[in-house]
Amino acid sequence: MLRIPFLFFLIFLICSCVGKPSADDPKLSELNLNLEDFFDGEVVAYGQFQDRFGKVRSRFKVDILGTFDGKTLILEESFVYSDNSSQNRTWTLIKLNESEWKGSAPDVIGDAKGKETGDLFNWQYNIDLPVGDDLLRVKFDDWMWLLSDDRLLNKAYVQKYGFNLGEVIIYFEKIS
Image 1 (cartoon, helix red, strand yellow):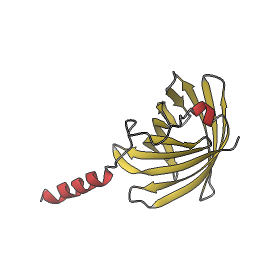
Image 2 (tube, helix red, strand yellow):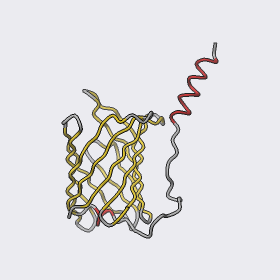
Image 3 (cartoon, rainbow, N blue to C red):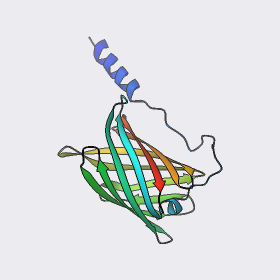
Image 4 (cartoon, rainbow, N blue to C red):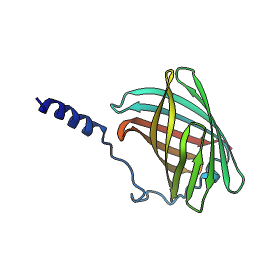
């Protein structure tokens, strides 16, 4: 009788595991990402959320206006989703040293922490996301790669209680 619940738990555990990039992965370019350079000015982004089974659940566009004063990067994000709903978020990112950042936003729990390495930026934080009339607290593990001076690819792994809920893929393009 215990075999069936154990089998379901084992299947759930296996399905929730996802391979992720690593900062130690071999570099595929000689580019160096500087968040303050890329996000200073206007940036537009397009993305989608896929659940853990690969089904696309939502698409969105984000208009971003960034300003950098030498230490603090402010990102004003305006989201428009495929269902025509909208959301605004303002990030405040502080450059701690040549490679490390910390950040905050009203719906982010605690500090977000990130590190630049070559063309890569890894960013982790907990956030309350609106789901219907409720808020769902999830963990984001964002991985960003600079593709060219004006293009950035982002893949974020979304988890709850250590289990994979899905992935967000975003393509950023610098306008000015």
